Amino acid sequence: MPSENRSDILIFGAGPAGLSASIWLARFLYDVVVIDSGDPRNWKTQEIHGFLGAERARPREIRHLGRQACRRYGVTLVDHHATTVERIDADDFRVRTDQAEIFRAPRVLIATGIQDNWPQIPGLEECYGTTVHTCPNCDGLESRGTPTAVIGSRKNAAIVALALKTWTDQILICTNGQTPRIDEPTEQALERMEIEINDSPIAFLDGRDRLLRAIRFENGEVAVCEHLFIAMGQHARDNDVSIQLGCKHDEIGRVMVDSFHRTSVENVFAAGDITPGAQLAIRAAAGGAEAALSIHHSLIPEERRVHRRC
Ligand SMILES: Cc1cc2nc3c(=O)[nH]c(=O)nc-3n(C[C@H](O)[C@H](O)[C@H](O)COP(=O)(O)OP(=O)(O)OC[C@H]3O[C@@H](n4cnc5c(N)ncnc54)[C@H](O)[C@@H]3O)c2cc1C
Image (cartoon, rainbow, N blue to C red; front, side, top):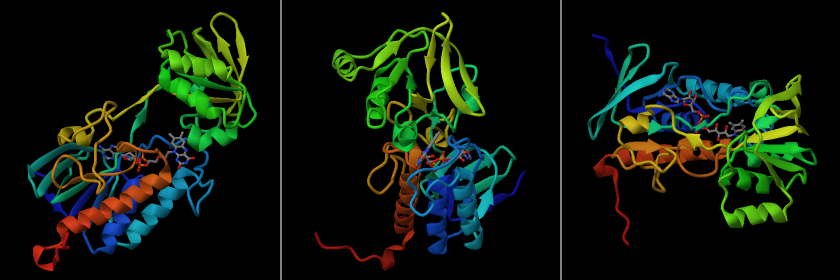
């Protein structure tokens, strides 16, 4: 029987949300364990934009700095995948990792991020993170004035295409052989903005040295393209810890939280991309800090509390 490691707080995920929460909780003198499988969705990104103090840093650099700070504060970093999570009672959660280690704590924070739905197109992987992107807010500026495509067949692809108008007028939506499922008002907006839809299947992406040059269609057509955004929706990871714990989710699997980052399950908190809202590294880090304060508040003994008058 493996021994059980007890701590005050267990955090799933060491992205900006989980690391930021760890640092704050360690500053409140808690014994914090962070379990991370090392598989964030932005791993291939060349640079993170708009993160104050670390503009254009690589995701791994931000993580490295966060992990260093955690070590200085005495946070335990466990590089495992949390596979099974149980709620023993309201103040006791038990986790088993893929390395058969067991951890227990009275509070948990879910910061496991989200996954993008991904098309199978030859050449895509090579350009991902440089000229193939997922988020117009994060990487729209990089497409400025260039021929840019959006892959997707639903309304979300139209929304991304319209958002990209801030930076470029040369926008094409490619449904990759799918029938477009876009409502009439959105279609009209695309027409007004002169954004065309091509529904031919894509043969491959033509790129060199991670720089996209064109989209080659199965019917022989070629569309010159220097940037491409994937807009095919997102999903929570299979068997995410939030699913195992019975947290309420929205339609794409994000964990519903209140303004204190509390989930629908008592003493289970969530922050970052796994919760609804802007998917920005700085918001994930801020959410982690806010969640840490809420967790701390939930652990303050009753005798230290003074209730404010209404
Ligand atoms: C291509 C791309 C470009 C981006 N560019 C920008 C940008 O320029 N600027 C910006 O602000 N934002 C950008 N973002 C968004 C930003 O990366 C995310 O908002 C941020 O990383 C979310 O942080 P997080 O901590 O919520 O999740 P993540 O960073 O995704 O971290 C989640 C962690 O949880 C771990 N995990 C998941 N399940 C388990 C489990 N069961 N057990 C253990 N560990 C687990 C994963 O391995 C991962 O390490 C970009 C995202 C992508 C995909």
